[in-house]
Image (cartoon, rainbow, N blue to C red; front, side, top):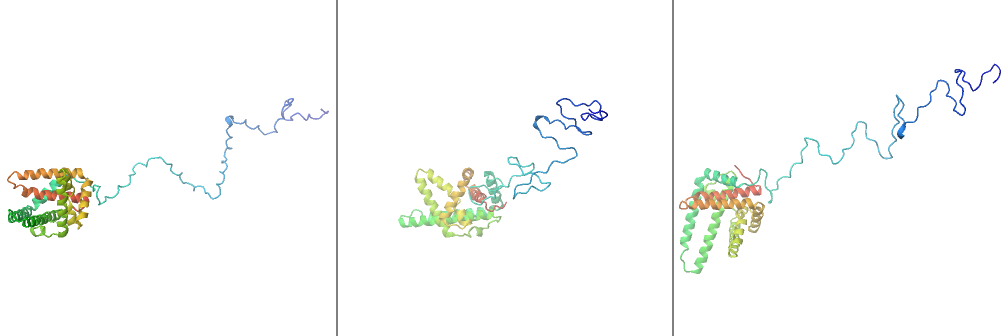
Length: 304
């Protein structure tokens, strides 16, 4: 210390602020010491009133999303409420699927057949009378013949006429499902007559062979070829294709169709009770119900 001077280690503003031995010098006037480092290893918060530093630029070739955009959706979440699953595939007109509306029901087929028969009963009854008279005359004409050739010819004629009569019933039933009431003349406007005869002959041969082989195979063939004439007349198919189509269509819903066939058999048994007169009702109903089922299963036209 010099005489009349100031001690260089003494704060002129504080007469008592003397340095401590071995300590750090005091901060300059007007400054405050920095805050202690935060605990836990977290970085210090940004200064008040400031903004955080901008993010680093994206790597070359990438761009950040535009402002206001939303993050990409995360997988594994259900769709938002109110969404609907995609519509089912359209019904295929082929076989093996049921058409829209619930498919075939036995009760619907029988009630449909009754409505159509009742709405055109006279035409169907007259057709039954014509078929009965023709078959009766042919049986009488070729009965009790000693000639083998005559018997063969008679059998063929009766069979062919029977096939054509079956085609007449199917033609009328197809007209009913088209929404047209068949007249007596329209029953016999047959199409594809050659294919009708050949198809019926093939079905008869297959059924006969099946009946010889323990009966059950014949019944199966009879059931699976139920719609052969429908395919020949309605789709203009050749006999072989029609038989295959009948197998495929019936196999697509064989359970319901078997129930329908059994119901029709029972209905015709009831028709036999009053001296067979009930067959004038039950036989047309059987053909109409079968053709209705054919159109439903194959996705064809069915007019109410």
